[in-house]
Image 1 (tube, rainbow, N blue to C red):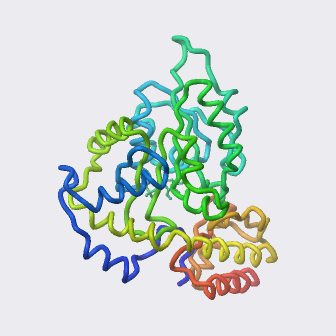
Image 2: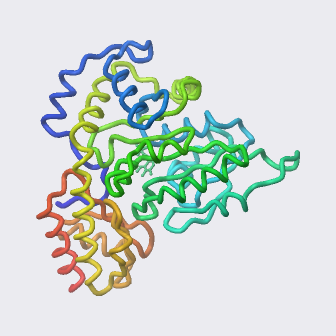
Length: 340
Ligand SMILES: Cc1ncc(COP(=O)(O)O)c(C=O)c1O
């Protein structure tokens, strides 16, 4: 089976498992775990922030960030297909008690004008708007990368309105590898940045939230409240550190495999895909040959596992456990299945 459902399906390599086995650990809720502390320092440094806190998941990292930036009754501005709104089970409403004001994006990206158009007068009729959320790369946008200039313009518009900015950088590593722009260059426009180790980097578990020391101290309290205080979490942090050290640069291979898949698929009847839209490791395309769930089911029978992301859209994702040969084999399987 060639599993292209997500970059979260990777399994730890033997070397990563050794790093996990050898990690020094302690009770991290009591502040004793040296491996977690090392990971948090490393993430803060990579993102150019004062501090970071290890999180069990990208979802918790985003939801803790939203909670820490707001109070119940506030409003946040978020793109309509952003993960923290679309796929996190109603977290902003349930956990932070905030209203989400949705911005209409193009492949998940919006503009400074969109932010300005959503601003409200500050008076008692309206919820106080507190936060703008950005996602780079954008998951439902097909792995789209935010141009740095557009990021800066959105950040300027938000700052002029005294709004805080959160970056969901679950795949920020992919954006940096694709563009050559260091993670900290993107991160510097944001008050908080969430990154994941369990996606393209191939660690089994874990994310981190970075920001000022004061913000991260507040985030730690909400992490505990949300049930995310983990004890000997150094076992997981060791995998994340290993992934950062050894699996970051190789993301370029995933991007090359995604482009190859996109070029192969674009030539097939019944698929609508512009390969130029494939900037990172996600390949999102429209299916006209049959309903997307039917095609996904037929592909699975033929040995390629993908996810229908809508009634007529499919997402295929490249990752650490997909070789170049498998990327090419996947195109051949699509061709056979579409030929009926
Ligand atoms: C952009 C983005 N943010 C956050 C998450 C949530 O991560 P997790 O599955 O670790 O909760 C995902 C998961 O795929 C994602 O794609």
